[in-house]
Length: 325
Ligand code: NAD
Image 1 (tube, rainbow, N blue to C red):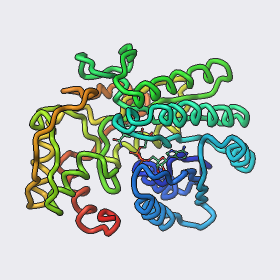
Image 2 (cartoon, helix red, strand yellow):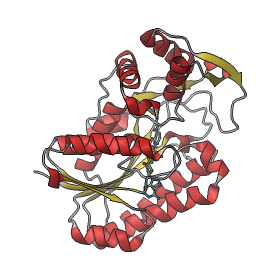
Image 3 (cartoon, protein in one colour):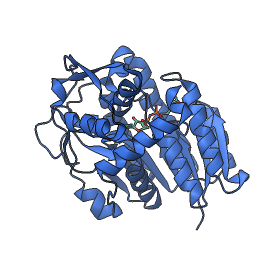
């Protein structure tokens, strides 16, 4: 059955892919994004162009430039549309930016999420999917990370406010029976990825001869997941109200940053100009996901190998004019 969904952060990296996936299967999507300047809004416009092009019919896709903290706007959107699900991706992603401006992180992640939860419970939305982050695990030595870990030592305001928003979801589930699934994304990469991500920085370094800071000589493990796999998990979560759950979305395999860089170099045929850097205070040497719970509850099964994912990313970076914006 065709559905109607609200996707917040729809002009961003992950949000634009989610919107496309929903449109491709025939759903109606309202995308909400304030096109904030955390990175060039022109990139977000290019993402929106791609989304618009993937709608089978014009009326399937509505984009609203607006803020998730604007409650009258939300009430209007929720009043005009009977949303089957909300996929809430809008955020100020990244630890570093949250250290520069903690009140902004708190306002977007807490106040913004609360406004959305309030509007969703008023109109009895069937399911609310929230983008959380692996950062909530902090500097845990317990890997692979399991959802049942305490997560009470987040290292940045970004991670702390993501964890707090997961907990607000529990309150709304408890008080109003709202279905709420928090998805903890690990390191997502692929076409349209954010310019501050390692994948983008390395590609940019290779193509433009820019120096790229790599700390610990790349001897850190991350769980890189291709955006196509991540999006499949998000859509599965939107389709399955689960009461209240928290689920990891990664590939479940640790990969050295140095190996990720080497793979990108191989696909591009170029060399990254790496310079050593001190690790930031909030860095963890090894983070990867236990994805057993997502496999069980969503039938989540990542299919894109690192080799294939990196090849797709490089192909986009090489050929897409918006990558050079
Ligand atoms: P992104 O910055 O590309 O997308 C976020 C979008 O939210 C942007 O388009 C931005 O304009 C919009 N936005 C920000 N504040 C807003 C507000 N107040 N109102 C409306 N829109 C607003 O980032 P992304 O990488 O696509 O991340 C999407 C989600 O996934 C975020 O919640 C992020 O925390 C989470 N996440 C991403 C990763 C990753 O590796 N990319 C990892 C973990 C978690």
